[in-house]
Length: 229
Image (cartoon, rainbow, N blue to C red; front, side):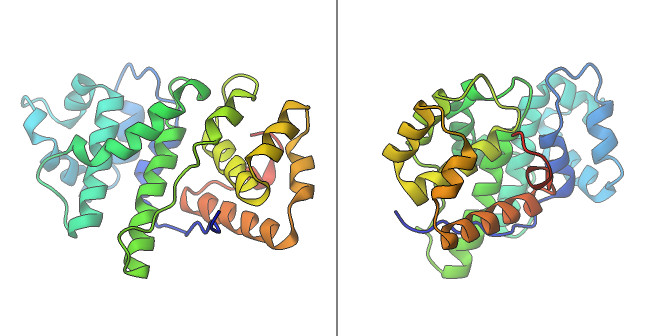
């Protein structure tokens, strides 16, 4: 299994803040637009991209009509389009979001309802892969979440609020130790600390650097400050 290198990616701050918030039920657009409105350039970009859905009542009403999940997805497509073509689009495109939606659906049963942590991880990976491919001049290079993660998550108790961190940590254990060892360890009640002790120093360093890169990308140092994920 090849080494896993996660890059630090400059992600849109307002969008990341929304993806980290619990917006399961949004009775008014206020919490969302309290984040968006101060950035007038972003607000105007969204107005332009969502004009096909605007019935004349404004962007806030458009968001309420679409619902937060749909608005979130389409908003993400604007950033991805910009990354690909170098300028913002005049409309949104759900086709650009297929990979992210597939990742979200893949691990949906392990995430807390109303949180967008899986979507956030998918968005980060999408943008990270663009960055890696551009840097290496290789469109086929990409970071993927191993298939073996699903059975590992089934061994966890309940749903995880920060399932993105859980998936990344388990991915590093798989890369460093292999699926059989990790599955057997978790089935016998071993803790993450026990698995971490089995990893070689160079793999530990890589794991720490990768998690730092992800935490910096989403502006979240929590995993380094608190024990529970």
